[in-house]
Every structure is written in C-alpha cells, then in structure tokens.
Length: 300
Length: 193
Image (cartoon, rainbow over the protein chains, first blue to last red):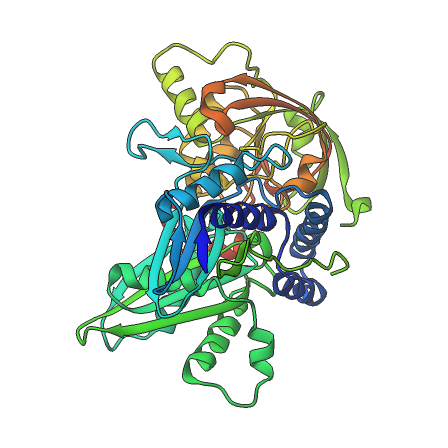
C-alpha cells in the first residue's frame, strides 16, 4: 500500500499535539513511586506539583511545560514503501510540526530561532524539526516523534574517553555539573561508541525507550549493560540531587544506554538528560491510514 | 501540595525589610504584579543600559520581581498559556546588572544560581525564588492578567506584566545569600550552566 502524504502529515501533527498534554503511563508510574518514597519536603512538594500539573494538562489538553520543545523525529523507512506524495520527507515532517504548533485549539510555543549565531529570529511555527532517517527492510514506516525541552537538552555532555577509561567514573563526575536546570527527576540517556556524532545520536535515541528500571531490578539475571544501568541508577540517586536540585532520593527515574562498535583507539561517550516533560511517542504507518495513538487512562 | 504551609505575600506592598524575614525553603504564595524577562530580553536591556538609552518605556521594574518565563500563547478564554520558570542559571551573567540598574527586588526562576549571582543577591539584599520547572500549566492558573509591555517583536521572549494570585514559590537564595541548592556546593559547576 502507498503511504499518502496527508496521512503522514496528519500523523506527525496529531502525535505532537498528543505528547504536548499527555505524559506516558510509564513516566506517571515512576513519578508516583518517587513521590511515595520521597522524604525531603521541598522535593516531595515539587514532585506533587508535577503530578498535579500532569493531570490538569491531560484534562485541559494544554501543554505540560511552557517549553513545548524542539521536535526530534526518528524514522525507519521500509525499503519496499511506495509514496503518494509530492513533498520530501523533511517537508512533510515540517508541515506536521507547523500544524501542530499553530493549532488554534491548543497552540504550542514557537521556540525555534533561525540564524542562531546572529539575528536569532523566531521561525513562528517551531520548524524545522531535527530528523533522523534509516532505511530498513519491509513495507512500513516506524516513527518516533519527540518534543525535547531545552532545559534538559542544554545539559548534554560529550567526551572521548581512553579505551581503558571507566564510563561510570565519567558519568558520576559529570552528572553534578549539569546542575538542576534539566528538571530532575528525569531520565539519563547514554551513548557509547561509534564516532562523536554517533555517540550523541545513540544517547538521544536511548531516551525514546519507556522507563523500565523497576521491572529490570526485579529480574534475577541481567546482561552487562542492564547491570551497568542499575548500578548507575543507584549511584546517581545516591548523589542526593533530588527533584529540582532540592535534595532528595530520586534524581533519575531510569538510565538508558545504547552502544555501537567503535575504533580500537577510542571510547566516545555522550550523555543527554530528559526532563519531567518527557514527551515521545512511537507509531507505525503502513498506508492504511493515519497513526493510531494509545487511549489515555486519566485515572492514572 | 499542602498549601497550609505557605505564607501569603502581597507583591505590591512588599519591602526589602520584609524580605529579610524569609529563609531558604520557605514556601510563599505570591499575589500582585510581576515583570517577565528571559535571555533575549536581558541581552537587550543590557545593551540599552550600557548605551545610555535607559530602560524601555512602559516597563516598571522598581520594587518588582522579575519572572524568568517564556509563556505559551493563550487559547480560548485563557489569560495566558502554560508559563513555568526557565533556568535562572543562564541569566546569572545579567543578575548584577539588573539589581544594580532596575530596582528589582529579586527574581523567580528554576535551578541553582552561580557564585557571582548569589554574591550580587546578597549585596543588594535581594532574593531568588523558585517555581517548579515542569509545572507550567498549574502555575499559569495563578496568573490573572497578562500584557506585553516591551519587546513584542521577540515573541515568547517579550517582557510581560503579569498579575498573579497565590503563585506557589520557594525561597532559594535569601537576602543573606543562603542558598537552597547546597547539594551542588562541593561541585564545580561549569560556566556554561
């Protein structure tokens, strides 16, 4: 079946609107656990406000955060796909972004500026998105749409470690330098390997996975990466940074790691935090229509 | 959110003397007038002050708090869209300029302040308050009036005058320079933060 341009644009639009006001259930569950555990009064109050805010947004269909993000899209394009479209893939994504951010029912904030070095002029419709595509076997499109807040994006870190250096040491040294502007509690995405730009991309793509550290901890056996994730999760939380940097038990809700082969001389490492406004959604298009987005349980 | 622990503050009659009773961790409900401003507005204000042009007409910072925010535009019958705090640390380099030249009492944002900003806050007997980053829609419900008073051309970065009622904040740096983000004290924060 052919993928129609209008279905594609409509799907980008509706997914951006959806994630602007609905937190994913995995995030809500992890935040509720963090709230129940928290003993620091200020941090507990901050988590409570974030949870109340979340419910108000789901009911009012208005954005979780005033920073409605820079749009990140990961697209896996099946190599058998045929298109019924006259715009390029990028143009279709940006048309979806334009519609979503200027929707009169739920206007989102236009935060993107062109000419970043000089005039920094607002583009008025939050375009362009940052788009990553990959060609894969098959006849469907696999799409992840995210709206990344820049309080957290600003705290991205990168380094090239020596092959024998220890990732945990670098992470533990680096996390405190990120301060509280990334709005903890959130998720830390780590990319290891490849080249400089590949490590950053791995870190970002790792943030697109659901929070599952609690399920992981209950498993009796772990892979080396899983064990490392749990170890970092515990160590980072022991730093006591807490919600909004106010001190407290929960700084991270999960730690994600993606890796890739790298040069024998090198160990590129990247780390990107995601804030309380964690907004991403995954859907597929096979030509049969627009994206179907999950029903929301307001009771959560 | 236990509001019984909050102290009500009337921003329109607030004085520096009253602010001296605030301690870090105190929770306040603010009512009255706030002025907004973030990165681009601060850069412009700095240029105007340095060039001798002075502050823009129609903006009265005197004895007001500046709120670091870039709100979402309103829809339907809203006064303003979601309007949570942005990272104050980015505005550290403008803090002394603002306290020195505009007569503000302090600022409202999120996250930790750097050493130089805290020193300036202490010197001016000012305060830094924090709202919860990521609670933007909840905070916007305490905003009762909003109008753009300067720099309309920079969109969400324009300077707004807001009327708030019972806006929840926490004292993060008090007039003596005590700082709630103690957890970062032993850690060398990078300048870019």
